[in-house]
Image (spheres, rainbow, N blue to C red):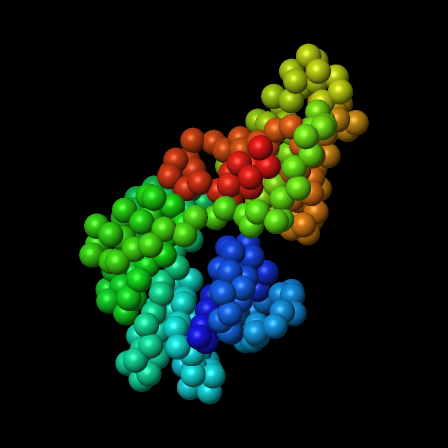
Length: 289
């Protein structure tokens, strides 16, 4: 079977899209064409796998490019990650009769409520409009795959056929070391809302009680200069020898470090998104137990 997977905002080596879904499809003997927008070609070369990246452009233009590519490649199944692509998916479905899967990996409403800097009333109005727009497009999806029970229940209540696809890592990726180091690790997005400043300040007490303990933080910035701000917090507490804050590292390096760590940390603040969305790292921490 030929499966086309399209995303307007994720990298080709995304944990969910590539390492979970694409690789599972390839191992089952299917062919996969992954289509991205404005991304570097970071996907590995595998038998049966192709990656096509279109230049950064508005979603409408990206949707038209998807339609042309679908006519050429003739997939038997189309999966889209962004609700803005459902309109193009509907046109592809009408022309070819193929089923459409809408993969919802994010809690859209809660994400916007957490990270938007707009006034609360404006956020509520925009969120209301986005939800109504998305619901008008759901008629094009035959199945909604959901990354959490909260997402699955929401879309089922809207009349969608849903299937849970959680973000557990692949078993062979994890090599847990029974001789754990006195090491705590956080990896993922670096942002103040995720409680990293609080974590660093709290680690002062950990070091007082366990001087051999160490904390490693890896990730990419949501807001510029977050990395340097966190490094300054480390310096103010005099913990340069115990805490490192570094840019994101390769997935396999992260998993290797997690396999040696005693603790995986998720210090998120009490925000709308974090109340309902289990992050990928939680499943990776489970796998390393």
